[in-house]
Length: 367
Image 1: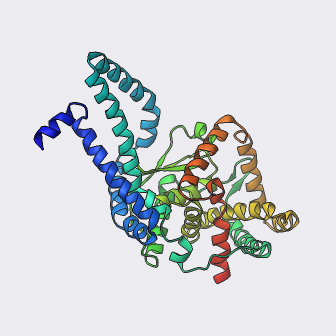
Image 2 (image 1 turned 135 degrees about the horizontal axis):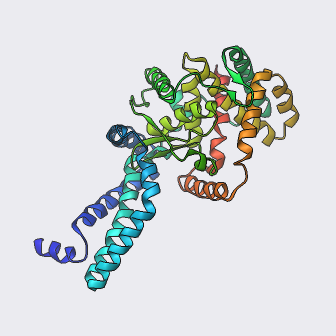
Image 3 (image 1 turned 180 degrees about the vertical axis):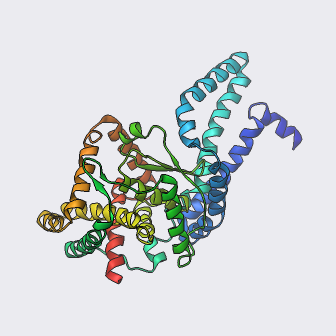
């Protein structure tokens, strides 16, 4: 055995062997949760959850986004790796092979981390079943009825929201306070739903948020660092909702429509008016878009007319803000990459974000 190890180690670094073994274990687990929802539930709620909590606490003390730092530093890291590989490769064939295997094993490690940390969340029991609501095919009338309920809630809240000329609505507290309010809501919901992990971790603000907005990404959960990251360039009501959304991913809710709906539940569970306003306004946008896609543009317009004029102005300000970023190459590339990734995970792709309306209709139908 020792002799075999030495022979293999001539071409495969010891650390790479460990990474490959982790990759093999991850492959078995990957197959397990692809074929069994029960296994996916168990793995996501135990092993994956423990690793997510560990990573979130491990990186939580860092005052900046480690994921953003690694992404920005990736060209330098890649250049260094290539230089080292070329130098070692020039010494002998054996060193060249070891360098290539080392690079390959790093990719295997990323795959293993994804499987162990986050992948099972795409194959678990659907959120509607976990919440005890019945998700069925949605009609235009149900979409309209749900939109009217949401509009009523927004109109009730409009007197409590500060909306300024040219800026729209303003969050009356800091980002840290937003995280605290979200944590309080998650703890409240966790008393009723045991699939929600109790986790006290920050949501990191992206330094290059303005540039990130061109990709149309308002937030991101990075499984390899355990960090929830926020694009702070978006309007406040989007920031609040996105904070709750990324925290849902941090708790193992992987599907985008389910993370969106959990963000909505977190926002409306809060005692804070702006948290609730953010939840309802984001859901209203999804419902309005769904009505338009369903060919009910007249109904959509009628419902929009019933919105308080201040809320309509807030949406107008958001539209003006987004015009600068609406059409660009970065957004097309980002959308294509994200859509491909989501489809590979067994979801409908980018469309899955908007499927939050199905859960919202089921939620209010049951109520």
